[in-house]
Structures are given as structure tokens and as C-alpha cells.
Length: 248
Image 1 (cartoon, rainbow, N blue to C red):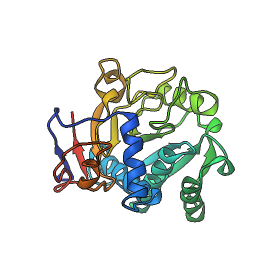
Image 2 (image 1 turned 60 degrees about the vertical axis):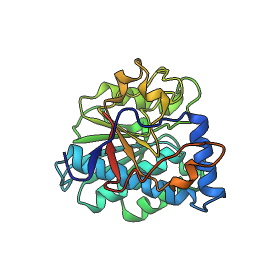
Image 3 (image 1 turned 90 degrees about the vertical axis):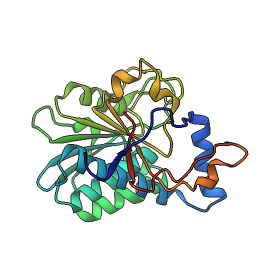
Image 4 (image 1 turned 180 degrees about the vertical axis):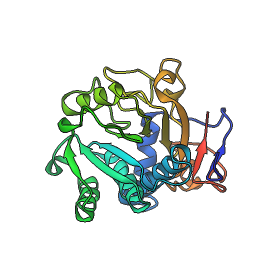
């Protein structure tokens, strides 16, 4: 395994979705680390993991399909698309909805990709044939509520019909990160990069069927934030040696 990726103990503190929402809020309100910064860090970590775990340290010439939703998870996947493109990969981006339906920060990331000339296509047009070196799942993050539907569900089912390796951002799309419930459909990943701290749902027996290898990415949460009274967690300098950590 690359020097970018270290192993952390399996008994490291884990959080649920409600606590992650608090982390995101405190990042913005208390520390002025805004969403675009968190998204950039998430996408960078995802691209690093793709490069090291799937491409042997060199993505040049590799073909990658990025499947992106309209929220923060999709925005992080689009940052990953930009970075892999910059490292020489041939990247295609498929969307669950039009740019007009996106929240502002993911829409900004999409505008960057458009200006770079990266192919951007509606998710309903995913190819039936062809072959990629990696599929990146950024369709739905921790905000999942019930079974995916519409184009998002179609894209998840497309992922699950393929034979290529799948790398999911934060969670396989469709998996509840608090309960570990597998909604219908849920993406089946070969590796999952979760963010900030591991989430409780990832350790449920049922969830482990869809997660694959589990990694943790640094979105630059200050250790002091976790000690806030709303969280009450005491953490050291978790990412002092690496931006991406292997959990199991």
C-alpha cells in the first residue's frame, strides 16, 4: 500500500449522521471553513485514493466514469474528476440532474469541469457497453432518506450491473450511515472513502456487504472542533502522516 495510506485501529471513535451534520455546521459557523473548502479536501482525498489503490500511483491514460449527484457528495466527486483529469486520466462525468437543480457549490464545481472541456452527460445516457478502469460513485451521500428514485436509482443500478471496480465517496449511494440500512437500490462498492470520522452505519453487518475496503479522508476538521460540547470527543492529530487512512 502507498505511503499516502496508513492504517488506523478499528476501535477508533465513530459518529452518526446527526453528529456529522453538527461537524459540518461547526466547521462553517465556528471555524469559517466553508463548504467549498471541505468539498475540495474530500475530492482531493478521493482522487488520491483512486490513484494509489486502483491505479498503482499513475492514473495517466486510465478511463474513469464519475457519477455525481446534485449535492455535496456530487461536488466532491467532481473535484475528484478534475484532479484525475489533471493527472492524465480520461474522465467522463454523468449527472443525476441538470446544473440548474444543483446547490451552488456543486454547480460551481460543474462549471469548472465544463470550462476544462471534460465530457458531462445526463445519467440516463450511461453507456451499456464499453469498459472503464474505475467507476466513482458520488451520487448520494449521508443525506439519503428512503429508497433512491429517478435518475439516481437508475445510475446506482447501472453501477451494480457493471464488472468494473467501484469507489464510493463517503458512503455507497443508498446506504444509511447511521443505521446501516441498505436501501433499494444501494451501490455495491469495492472501496469506500468516508470523511472526517467513520460513521456508525458502516460497521453494521449488513452494510459491510456493500462497502468494500473502508478508508477515511481528511477534510481538515480541527481537533478542537470535536471537543465542542455538542460532540464531546477528544481526538489527537489523526491525519498527521497521511490524508487518507485505511480502516479495514
